[in-house]
Length: 341
Ligand code: GDP
Ligand code: CA
Image (cartoon, rainbow, N blue to C red; front, side, top):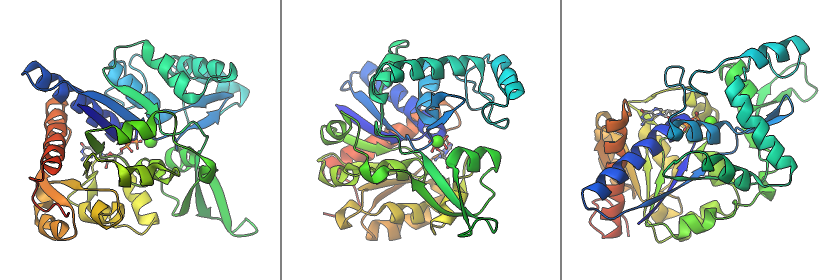
């Protein structure tokens, strides 16, 4: 069995870690072995201090390798920041965006390989070789499509300033009201090699509970991805990143508000749309506290189930991934209630 996941960084890592565990447990219990491909958001990527950063890819890489800082929630465990202090002295980079020493090692390796002519996908393959991840990470595209955020600025001629997503997110903590998110050059991007095949060849396609705007939204904006999702024979099942009207971690609500979508599990499903009606989802998992929304979502063409969505530890994440796989399996065999045909 082949599973393909669309994912961003933090929500993506927790979900994929749980999925890997669930697949392991099922195989140990005599179930069908499964492979996992992860199509990773690249909209957060940037050039900084002369090196290429791929934050969501690295979050997944570090978390799945078990070398991530679980307390801080990002970066490497046991990190030091000596180089960052020097860069600050030189006035290079962003003083509010700390690059840890171990993390910089990754960025230097990546940049070296990019300068040798490797593509981001090929660089990603090399980075993954260091550890037994048990999943395959694929940048969604090899084209640079760094997300920029437009904010109101009376000092600009047209009243609009554009800043890199990371500046808006990390420096301003998403507090500047966003007018628009633009993935630069995305109209000329193509899915990275293997991405379309991973979606078409999948038995189940899962959307991690990642940021619907700047993580999943960016992947979906790459020309060809939506069409492929419409075409794949695999059921497409999403997991809500919103529980009881709140983002669980982070500031994704600021992104949803900016594009006019309520911070609400049902609103996010409607934003993605039902595949039976031109959208991308067959199934949708909401939290038990959002169970009252399930009936109207079923009418709108989403096979909806209410299950615990808090990924508080590996067990909870594995159970959630199992629920997503079960819904996909039921959709594939026509058993899922609420599935539109
Ligand atoms: P980022 O790239 O690091 O911002 O991470 P993602 O885009 O992958 O995911 C961020 C989203 O994950 C947040 O907006 C949260 O809504 C969601 N999230 C984080 N933890 C949980 C959780 O335990 N359960 C669910 N359902 N969603 C979560
Ligand atoms: Ca991200």
